[in-house]
Image (tube, rainbow, N blue to C red):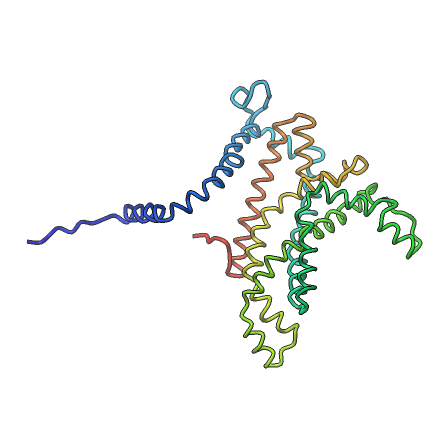
Length: 318
């Protein structure tokens, strides 16, 4: 007598496999529950606030009592007299930060990797990543004091070149260089740690073989070191692309002052002023939603280009 074969669908098999894996790794699942709770409470639940972008939002009426206006707020945003200038200014800062934020840490990591004195190398590395742990409130205080009319830089320029004190924070033309340089000073050392970790994973026998073949230091860097850290570089380039839609509120807000604020606003400070200073909540929310959608496009677009050009990406498109 033939016993009937019981067929199990692939979907039920997958479910069984999924739940059995969860059961085996329940201790890890419990460990990440606080992190999941934080993300849900502070990232997902507040997302209902984007409703204000499609409403004439009033505080006394709330989200469910305010009048729906469709895409009117976005129309007002793109017709705003300052938004185009603010948006282009933001792109100028963010793309410069993005490019230098990849090039400078890689270069710094390569230079550190070439140091043979371990004590000196550790000292330089520690001093370089320490500014990352300072808030922008503290860093902006350093920058203001350094660039003040009687600060260290003006003192050096006066003693060495006889140049009169420059009012760096009274002229908008100096603002972007100040933003870029202060960002690099704060974040280069910490970003270089990731590349140093990638460098440590490269097989040292490759360098020995290249040295035997007569390859110089530059050739070893080009043909061994850079290909070895390329996966890390691509991953960080894709992840950092999400930040191209903004210039960094904390930094810009703390470095601005009344003399140059109108000429140095970025999208984040524009949202702050419209929503919290002028109480135009709907317009500010529309600007924030536009910025978020643009960041998503940058992230997906960079990943797509990376897959097409370099054959690598964080996730694949089926």
